[in-house]
Image 1 (cartoon, helix red, strand yellow):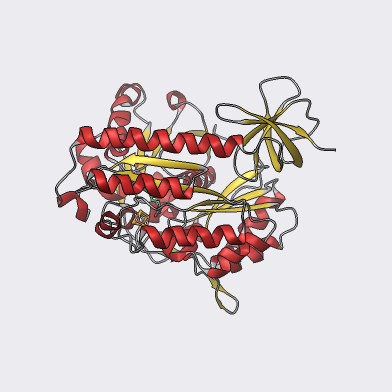
Image 2 (cartoon, rainbow, N blue to C red):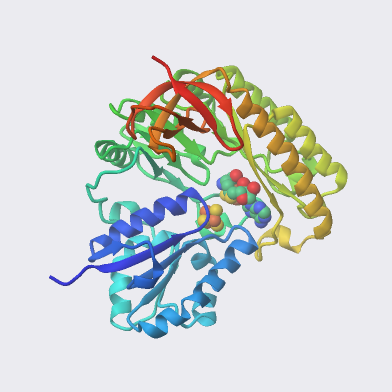
Length: 440
Ligand code: SAH
Ligand code: SF4
Ligand code: F3S
């Protein structure tokens, strides 16, 4: 038997890329590859890329440049680019960087094994099609190896919303939902391998409408099906769009014990003028009313968000409206970005905001969000929460896990294993995590 070939995958971008990288590694596992943590001893390097902002895309070219020496030393080394930059700039990558052997867009991953074989025969291959078939069904099954307590599971992919700043509808294609039975089968398999918490993924995960035995299921209906799986303790989902937040999903937050009290619900901006120009099709007011309804169903839910500052034509007054919205909502966590011009998107053509003004706004917004985040975290002190332990801590006897609200929690003198769920009383709040003690 020949020695296994080694695969090095580097993943950028969102959780969906993390999930895709796992599936690609498993598919190439069937072709005799094992994963390695170092590019230096790899027979194949795969960069799973992100195109969301300019910096993310540029990283790919600088990373590729670094592999030049490696390829010179090892002519059999194959280098591939996957993910959203591959989809958006596949031909340009091949042109700009001759050491790339393979370019594969997110909808063609099931063809990776045959593409790999072609590169071994000396060919260069590029596949950025949007085929009709379910790639995850065609990708080789996950091997039955034991897994950690948490896992991602893609249930929906693509986006039809076309926000004026965003590349995702072009890189991931139209909204598609996977059939419910396949998701349930995959979830059951994950649980049998040790997973206790599953995060359902989709670019617009709450637009999920996958086929079920009696017609399409909503995301809430899918969650209730997952709720029946013994051994699955926690369910999360991300990312939701405010316009797809249906009543049954809001209700499930109040009634489904396995559905965790955490919701990432990006709003992007607080000015209706800017929201309109972003093509978000919701207003600041409708978003705030929606948050109120969600909190009525689950009062302790932790709300998370995404924000863009410096969108074309954003004035100081518009920015102030974003600050006002943040003050009103009170976020438990949030991600904020300076607008990045993406070629081919409608906003790229519009009058741009002075970069210094945008930097200044980002700083002010981040200061406010950090303060809120800390307040929400500090308010956990004295409360009892569920913690799913994931690993041992740095101190002897310490375990680290995530609370129901997704805060990192350290527990000292903890006689529990990874994968165990325990009740914990929070005793203090640190810079980025909480400390707690086991109850009972
Ligand atoms: N599907 C999700 C997330 C999309 S990408 C949603 O609808 O919210 C994640 C985040 O990146 C977005 O929420 C947005 O805040 C940010 N983003 C997207 N395009 C951007 C751009 N051109 N410049 C800066 N931030 C951007
Ligand atoms: Fe991008 Fe908007 Fe779609 Fe989210 S909803 S992926 S921000 S186009
Ligand atoms: Fe990036 Fe593509 Fe995800 S652009 S954020 S990797 S969907």
